[in-house]
Length: 123
Image 1 (cartoon, rainbow, N blue to C red):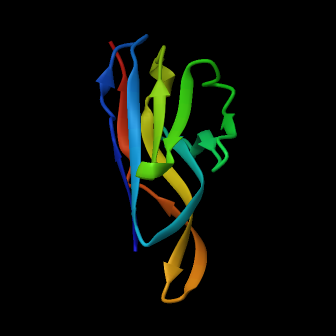
Image 2 (image 1 turned 180 degrees about the vertical axis):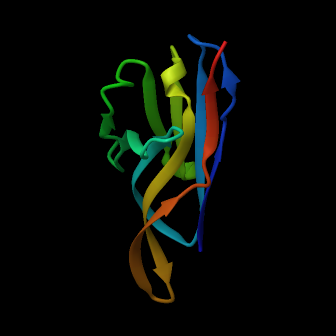
């Protein structure tokens, strides 16, 4: 019904930049909160940043001032611009979206996750 497709992960040197994208497609009525989470090896998945439908943003303390989340509602896409990357930013980054879908004639609000994209920060 709904798919989230991420792109943009890569190997980058410390101090470098990357831009992640996540596009939602399917039987979408509206998209509420969108966000990015990450999971490093041996660690729990953690919140990186979220953005509401009204463009209210929230960031983890560890990325404030370095990462910027944004969204393009016309394209059902959320972005994460990551600057001044550090080795500790290495993780699989997952896109999340709180989406209201249409099922027959009814609306249903559900959570969706992308498949993940690898970000590696290393010299």
